[in-house]
Length: 232
Image 1 (cartoon, rainbow, N blue to C red):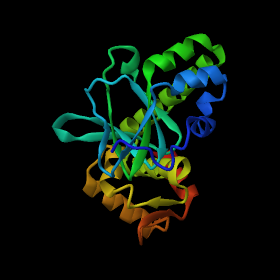
Image 2: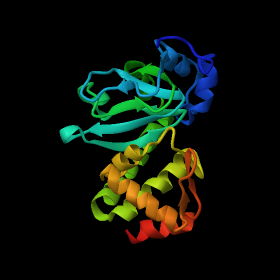
Image 3: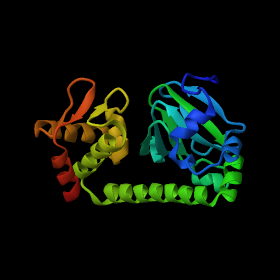
């Protein structure tokens, strides 16, 4: 749906909430905001489609979305969950304008589209902004490296523990909303079957590490999950 939401009062308010834009001067912010527009997505709607052409970064201003790779035999690998005031832009924006992952709304989500040409123009003129952007990319790479280690070198219990720690510490807090993150999503985060993910979650609940009653997964014993993660 193409319209302005209550989250999109003006660009200045949004810019103040995106830490990446802290180093920009007013004239540079004006350039970033030129041609910018907002789209509201319903839960389950695709924001970016892997393989499509795009010339936009997006900033989630309300709601939650998942970033995932569409793999072989319709198997998806979730890379991360996006919450408000985070920027999403794939490596293809600097290569062939192709998208190398998909992004789907987990709830009603407002996304602001920023044209890559305006972003690049400001990037070339502001060294401090360019350094902050490089730091942002480096953090993204480090996260992917850690995810790779988790998926390839840890047993299933360690991978589920990693997913719960990530969802708790980085996204939702002590209560992970089951209305937003399904058991299938947890399976797709950890590269395992849905049945295996459910089985291990039940084991964690039986052991008193989590509580899956109600509409959330509540973290009861974070230290135990960290220990399971560390031991793999």
